Length: 130
Image 1 (cartoon, rainbow, N blue to C red):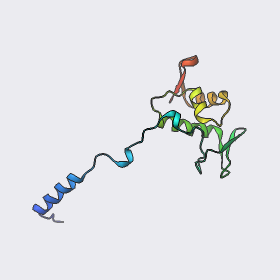
Image 2: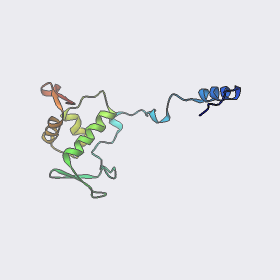
Image 3: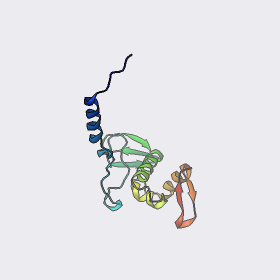
């Protein structure tokens, strides 16, 4: 219940700890990347494989056999897209190109319009969080 008295050793140790303190974490340093150099496509939520096949409204992994609703797979891909490219707008075309496994733009548009708010009309339209 009593506090120890601080001496010069304690002050020296505190100064040394303070000098060793790093403000930039290694884990926050993100490497440079470009949209064109990244592999595009939906990844399996279990094994991260790009080898997926669309079977009606389900996405099936050809590596591990996991099955996921196509809507959920597209929404995961949208979240990845938003994380990697926060400045790019979410459009039907950009997500269709990003997902690759979903062949129909109509399906992409339906998923986006169900889960996001549409802004604009025509080619300038884009989606954002509700």
